[in-house]
Amino acid sequence: MNLSSLWGPLGGALDAVRGYPRRAPLTLAYVGVLLLGHAWLGYGLSADRAAAVLGHLSTNLDNLQDHPLSALLGSVLFFDGTLTDVASTDFVGTFITLGLGVCCFLAWAENRWGKPRAVAVYLGGHVVATLLTAVVIAVALRRGWYPVEVRQALDYGVSYGAQTVLAIGTLALPRRGRLPWALFVLAWPLGGAEWNGPLPDFTTIGHLTAAALGFGLLAVPVFRRQRVRAALTA
Image (cartoon, rainbow, N blue to C red):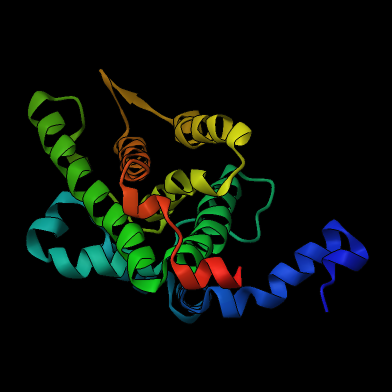
């Protein structure tokens, strides 16, 4: 039964939720992993042990030089934010990155292009933005724009990959909504930016880099086409 024909927008939302496992099973499984990881860190480990795990998985300069693969892949298995403190700015970030980026736009990408291409966009955005940001950090440290402690800063989570799919997800919107959405994707990381000389903090640079990667993919013809099965079953 098509609930949208009976209950309007509410029915459409219920139809979307009901069809989510069929349209985006990989995204659903990934969200489950993120939630389990969040619960494990918050309730399954002591504070010291959780800090040690995140410290090992952080994609800071020292870790990228020492164990780059486990840092790059491990850091994307957890999200940096809160699900309970809804009045905080951290919750806003969680809503944008985990809620909109992963739950909505990664699912849209999986349904539109299939699992391999959606994973490539998401992980590619995470990895490339992280590595480019590391280059910026190294240059900024040499010029004295960042404090030396940045080499060991805690940096993990889904936000760079989410930012990439938020940007390329501009295609999901009606034409009249694309420019405002693009401006939002670029603007929200700047809301809490802290400036160090001529540069904002490195996480802001990472988010803007990830967005630029996503917008750049909009020009690639293969990302402007739906896969045939998705077009027929949407």
